[in-house]
Length: 209
Picture 1 (cartoon, rainbow, N blue to C red):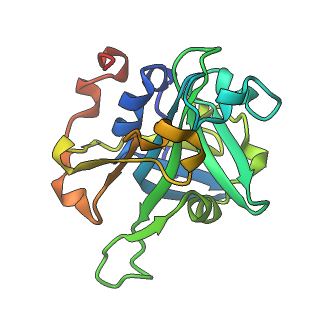
Picture 2 (cartoon, helix red, strand yellow; picture 1 turned 135 degrees about the horizontal axis):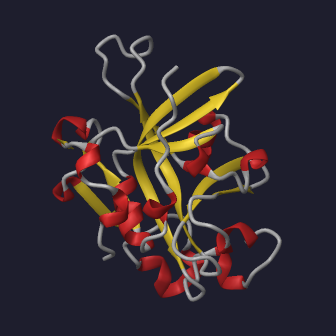
Picture 3 (cartoon, rainbow, N blue to C red; picture 1 turned 90 degrees about the vertical axis):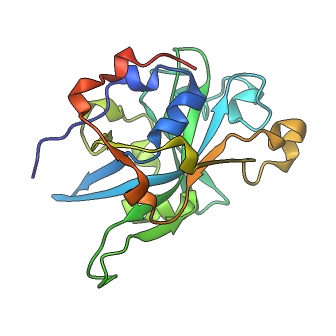
């Protein structure tokens, strides 16, 4: 297998909305029991700061949310409805709670699709099930390239193909539920992404937005 090429911490240390948009087209990689799975990220949601009523952190720093206050690039994994795991990536500075939820992925599996068209896996629970992500990965440092990490494979998603939508399932958050902080790309839009030279644009030089 190829050597892991995880995104550096500097990628995640930037403003959360910027990170969320730029995660689209990146690949989440899961290595377990000698097998490596990878999938293209196509749907994410951002959760930002203490005042975001849709965020777990709006209730303060607790045992459950402690990871959100930690180093950027850590995996924040929690369970909902007692059965579905959700994978988040911590962003911004230490002690400032923010993260991006991975809501959907595309998997290229020719054995499932003879045409070679990607298989779309929608929803954070299904995403975690496919990637074998559970609470044992909570707090994992994805920048180390072990067990779970994010890779840039040179696909820069054109902004015109990114949809900004209200977040899902957070009606209790009032006006915060209406914020268009869910970002997704249409099905099979890989052909519309731009290939680029990864080494020509290091993440640490990206300006915050």
